[in-house]
Amino acid sequence: MKVTIENKKGLGKDIKVIVDKKTMNEHLEQRYEEVRKNYTLKGFRPGKAPREILKRQFGDVIMGEVLDKVLKDTSNKALEENKIRPATQPKIDLKKYGEGKDLEYVISVTELPKIDTKQLQNIKFDEYNVKIDKKYSDERIDQIAKTQNNFKDTDENYKSSKGDLIIFDYKAQSNGKDFKGNEGKNTQLIIGKDLFIKGFDHQLIGVKKNETKKVEIKLPENFPEKQMANKNAIFECKILKIQKNHKVEVDDQFAKNLGAKDLNDLKQLITKQINDEYKNSLNMLSKNQILDQLDKIKIDEVPKELIDQEVNVLSHGMKEEEIKQNKSNLEAQAKKRIKTGLILNEFGQKNKIIVTEQELNSEIQKQFRMMPGQEKMVKEYYEKNPSAIASLRGSIYEEKIISEIKKQAKSNIKEITKDEAEKILKAENEKSIKETSKLKTKDDLKEKKHTKSATKPKKTTTSKKTTSKKTKKVSKK
Image 1 (cartoon, rainbow, N blue to C red):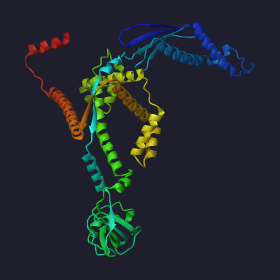
Image 2: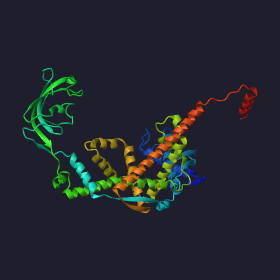
Image 3: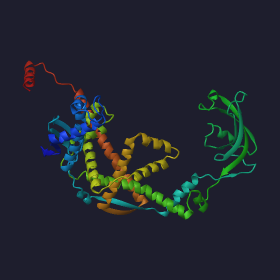
Image 4: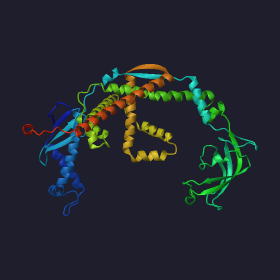
């Protein structure tokens, strides 16, 4: 095999490959032999069919199969030997082929640019350690305690009020007649929540234990028995119990109910939870600082094909006119994204960063925990959408790369309080809103300018001389 790189300027390469006819004939002979072994021809012993007969029947097919195999093997080898990494799918242009001939073809390929990842060691970023004051953990625990119910029985003289838990049996009728689903035993509702039938629990305010109370109500539109929807009904309720909600004591038992060993353990868990909440947001700021600096790393040339592909992704769903108006912005955004991706990928390869199946499965399991009861749906989603798995793998890969960059880059560690963390995050959020607003204003101004120029009336003149001059100028052009 003879390989020649015909042009060496820029990322575009034309690689001329010649495979001599002797090698091609060997491949053809080998394939004919494979076909001969599995082909029985009348008048010939199995595996002894003449080549000429096989050629008449299968010549074009065999040539196509050999050509595909040789092109695949030799083109990959040509790229590897010349250390060329394609940015997009290479194109192959056949120049000469056939039985008894050399195979000659040209690979047109856009190469990935060379990137010096050592520059990443000069990146600087802020790393935050948030110190959570004890009072914030106590406040969070008190908030949790307020959401916990602690209902206790009341005596027979107690009259129900808002917030109480009522336990009752009922039998309902509509127009004096029973209907399907008109009875309930040990039904529970909290007065004021309005979760049973709208307006129902309010009528149970002031009832006592063992009392019978009639509740007149309109059955809801979504009542299980469709023929009863929106009909009036009377519920005869036998009050079995009234329980009053008492303040939950924050103690060891409370902590154990929440899965902690004791109150002290719960405080430590809550402190870590609050810390993690802020750390995750602050880590995103650190990541953005790193990504912003990646854009300053010099790359001689970004493959235009990749930019065009990314523009198509960014402009998905946009109208043609909108794409034209925002063309420069879309291209700039696409170039930045491609450039960042190329740098991250190069760094990942040089540092031998990979995503294991275990890491992928662990992330999916994490999603299971975030969506309890919907595990089957999540599992089926990933099974039916290979692109979703690829996207998830890409996200994990990027996070591992950012993590490794942080190890090699220069961190500025800042010890901050929760209040300081909130200020930093608020300022960053306001900055992001301003930048978005600026971009929107720019786009609006462009739109107005475009509309104005399109609707602005052109000057007219009655002068014949002026008209003829204009016509001449146009004809000259």
